[in-house]
Image (cartoon, rainbow, N blue to C red):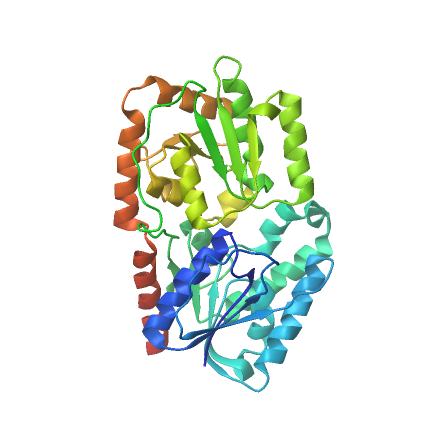
Length: 387
């Protein structure tokens, strides 16, 4: 039995669901039937994700009013589904599903693959600010992370920054494989940038409204730019009611509420249409421990590069791993003025946007596709199964 388990809703309009689809599909092609265990999607979620017929998807319920209640519910349902089964390989994406499997590894599976996309001891405070003050909870999270790291026969991560952190925490480098995220070039078709309209550039921010993403900096950059020239900002992606309310309140305080379009999550095809309808994509990731110490491989950067819309992104190691100065305008992280100046440069320097666009697409096709990531995944699995 081969199992891929993830405390993520699937299908869903988030990058995690895109990653799951790519990896599970490739594993099923190579090794036959897989069981995919995920959180049940929210009602009314548009699918947008296709799995091979050899993948059996089981969506587990996660009732509860808090994250901890939902995690514990998912773990109960996961072990109830497991019953007396024993897997040859189980692939997990977080400690939320991984910890009970790591604890019972000898009984539940032969090999454990831990795909480290985020570490809750670092990341959770950006979603739930009160976590930062709960030292007891942080100690528990770190202990569960360590148990998963020690039990894993193979550690996968999309970021070299994350790989270095795992090694600092005692993980053998021989077990760590870095596989950056990717994009399907056919699904994310390229289109050359077009001249800006009379209303000025339409800026796009795609992603969650979490603080580490820097959407507030994008809003401040819009306000700075609009002091002299017209521009609009479209923000699309998931966010809690309090995050959306805070963003709208900040826009009103900056005097740019009328120039802000706030959209809910959308499908990949709708997201591509938005990229092609906009003139500049912003990826203003913040210089904090989430991005500098934990690491990430932001899909927003790769998707913008694939679509052809000129990209302005924070100059951080996690971004430099994906884009260079030929394929994006990399600016000082956390600086609204640097973003504004980047937009001004795109408007003033003839041909710059198209040069960046073509170089970005070439970089994606050469190194940042899900096909390439899938090959690296199978190479890692081949090494695991041969041991």
